[in-house]
Length: 249
Image (cartoon, rainbow, N blue to C red):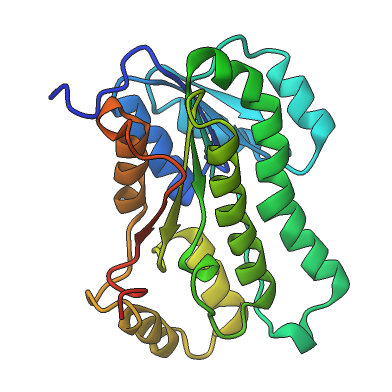
């Protein structure tokens, strides 16, 4: 293995790590030499993934619950990397977004970043560690019928920049802003909202990325690995698009 972007002896925690981008990130960080905590509300899925990945273990965390997070961190004595990946989506413009649905999206996508970061902060300050928040292009540009989701991902970008300003020498924090990535998240959206026209809508999703394809979880995981490495030590408070040219266009 090349020593570039190597994370030997680093301890990482990835939320929402049992599938999609989270699972690919757990695999990639382990491949880079890190010990990985696979945190997910679905413990059995996390355990199944941990059985495949060396130097990893499953951890049940409800990222919307401060009590669940507190109990998990009571068992963690060292942490170098936190990847705030857990998130959900919601389809609807402002007129069709209920108060309950808006609050649910904000709890999972925004409050979780606050709660996890606050809990991890003492350990990350001790290790001069790194945080990577998984945002979205929806935090940078408007996406049709994604009112709550855009609001939540804009907040993730703002929190990333603000924490970088408060702790410029103590830790590093960056946000990745993916375009549409081929994950169970996207498949669930197609099944729920476009079951009768999946091929048509999938083609539309591909078309809005000028490169001509959807992203893969591995695309995003590689960028997470880089941002956590010593080669990226001058990158702090950044929002890095990885979207096949979507926001450039």
